[in-house]
Length: 109
Image 1 (tube, rainbow, N blue to C red):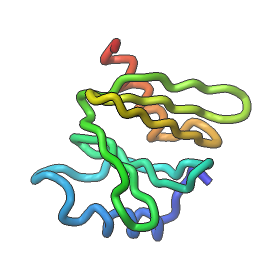
Image 2: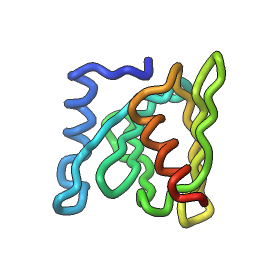
Image 3: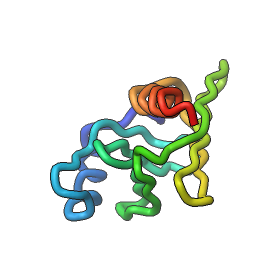
Image 4: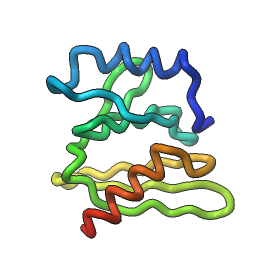
């Protein structure tokens, strides 16, 4: 269920409250099909929210990796400035996966 409801967005917004830099805000989000974790793209970073808690975050300007689309799913593989990497699976392309593809492609990293 990559598409999220208004209730999902509200719950994620509550989890982010007080944890974003001044002037930062949520742009888009989608739910990872494999883990149920919400991937949230803000103006400054990519934040992962699971069970109402922030579980990971990567600065937007340091994102590198790939977004692969096939007939079954969209797989996002990202790495930040540190060695850690993230893998997400989404049922179909959505605003989040499109935005991440643009970020990774534009960065030519």
